[in-house]
Length: 361
Ligand code: AMP
Ligand code: MN
Ligand code: MN
Image (cartoon, rainbow, N blue to C red; front, top):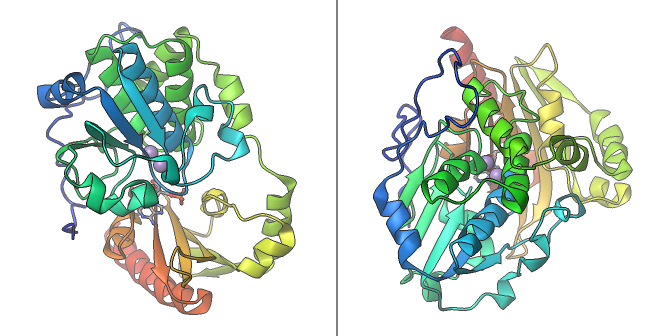
């Protein structure tokens, strides 16, 4: 069992030192504002047959960092295998290399090294990681979640980075891999999606410089935005129409529940935190949540919880305590139980957190 201790008050990330933002004198090509531990570079150099994996219920940073790592390793003459538990949704199929992602049944038992990207705990790798077969293989964890449980043999955790893709920009530079072509396109995707189009409160000039460099390398920002943030199925609107009719707002917390029946009727099984991100724009709320009913791998009814917080509030700590993870402004967890039970219990905890945090302001 991995140890789950709260690291909310600690910005412990030994291998990543970002230089604080300062007035920009030389806006481009001055991005080595980071120190990467030589152990990380060495473990990559030393191995050839490498399995790369990202998290279940994947987002743009999961695909961007998985595929980006693939391009970095191929540039170094290595033979990476990329795997994901979930099938690639249509919106990410434009990403170069996405067709080569394999599913868990095609994952072998023997590799020299496993690299896990953008996942805060081992369970997030889903069925790609088979504990018995894969535990003896060295595991390199590259992630930016402050709640990361450090489950790898070597861990590079950088909560100051807005996306795992930002870390890979620094990694590519350290490994002398040009930030161009398919690699640039994949890495800019993670930056764009995890910052909701450079709008989150952690979007610093350094982040913009990183994006600028990827664009100079050929990454197409408008195309990435059009394919990801600015595109959703009309079925999702139908689902929102139904669930928003029963919107709750109490004590600074706004939330909705989404049942399997509602998803079935709307013809979609995906929301991906989009509704949570929209709800947090409500002027009356400081914390938002969506509760989505699902059936887990064992056939048990479970609820996927997605949280967002306005600047000054933190939903990462609660998600971590509940067995999930994330960042102070965006986090999530999956809990066993019915929609009614879980949403009631978690909303009570969110209201308590809200009250506590509001008192500190
Ligand atoms: P989402 O609401 O799905 O967009 O997720 C927001 C953030 O919380 C992302 O950084 C996710 O990686 C993280 N997150 C969501 N669900 C979980 C979970 N079950 N366990 C750990 N982290 C999660
Ligand atoms: Mn992610
Ligand atoms: Mn991420």
